[in-house]
Length: 251
Image 1 (tube, helix red, strand yellow):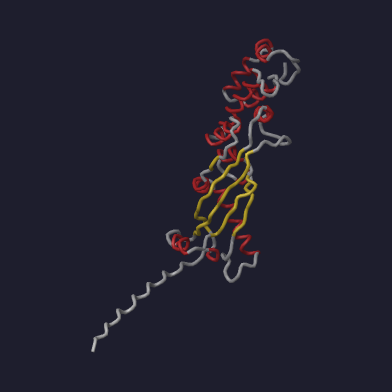
Image 2 (image 1 turned 90 degrees about the vertical axis):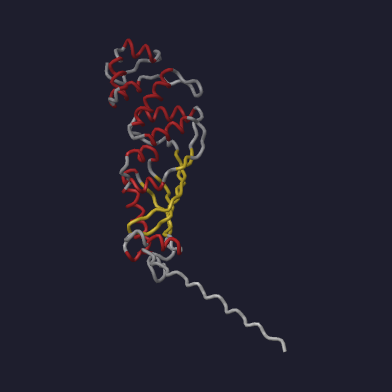
């Protein structure tokens, strides 16, 4: 029997046993994506709030599949299925340190905005904005699986006296403040890489799973052309104390 053939409403475990799917089941558990999708396809879906053994099996397969991306991806997937809806704080400093795609996307946005906007005498004056970070631009698989496409990452090139002084220790770099507020949500019309994930997300959403916000803030150093790096502000000299008045002598 080829995968996807109709088996009516026969219970999932009966389908697996009598249709000869045990081999597929163990192959799927071992990580064979094609057979994992095949097992998912024959698991009968229950009603919202009343999961069947097939639903639970699909959910576990989905977890194993997402775990291939990495621990952060699995943690986000589990958080969604747990139905709390609470925010997750993302480690932006770590993400920017490890993923060159995130860094390049923000650097390109800074340069583009600095060269096209009327920001006064210097390219770095008043530079801020937001940028979309696509999965295709990310390098770390764990971040791709955890966050997917980022609709809005806000950034600001810091020009405070403290930021300028910190730039001194990072030649060719400038301090940039980044802030994330992006929703982890299920889109019914999306075509996913895995039917298992799609089915699991669909059933979880119908049963009460909640979208949640991915949030975070950090100051990160980014490689930028010299015209975008605010110069160091010399320290303001401390004024000398006022002279001590000479006491007047009484006559």
